[in-house]
Length: 202
Length: 174
Image (cartoon, helix red, strand yellow):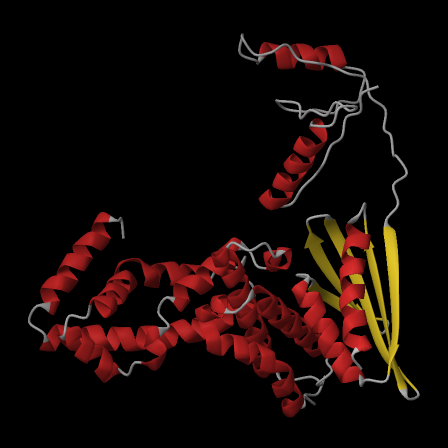
């Protein structure tokens, strides 16, 4: 089937999903009915998109658009779970899907930090950044890598999280490599992380 | 006469709601509702004595003696109730739709799908689960909004009444 997709139409349908994605995990601070309203808007837009109201897109573009709907819905499902509110519709996402989104979201600080800023914070021994890098080094990269290959997690969500995670890990790898050569205490710390990882059976 | 009910559930939250209902009903004077302890098995076939003997032989001594009943399937006639609400207004379809979306979100109703000119939602309330169909259409100078609420027991009335109250306040102010 030829690609006849109307990108302006798809962009319009993606608006509520983008709104949720911009808020990220902080969407949980919005009132319950606001989140339910957003859930419904995203679900309806997803339904319209899947019915090809905006036409047919090339496979890669199609996967990207679908991933935006799933990313927003799983963020909302995570918020309902975290606040302990009962909203049955969020069982659309399996616990592993919500957990994977939450784990990647933990690293969202990497979204706004440049490589230089990460290094500066490391120089100051910033506890938050050190904590994230340690979690990354010890467990996260393996956990996310494995989860992103798990067929039980829907493909569009894996696509979205893989792109996000690859962006974060690029920054973290570069920051660690840089810090190891420039900060005299860093090689010792990384060696300690290595030992911890080996103890964990890695 | 005793009745055995086998209630399937998909989530832990659903199981808890079943437990709550059993607890609520077991407090009533004119009924006896208990949740049997142990594994409930439906057996059909001619080898019941052999099956029972086999099960007995694998049970620890000290466990309560098994209770065995002969049952026949019973399907009490329980129909879903549907409450239909209909409104006509001079307001635009977009305004009505936005308000209905807000109302449904307030009820915790989740969009399921659309088709046949209607949007379908599902909501869970303290009175039970309901499904809500919404159709909004412009007819000449007016906009018609039809809402059908379907559910068992008091759930449909409960949700429809809440929607109706708010719709009347909203449209009354037009």
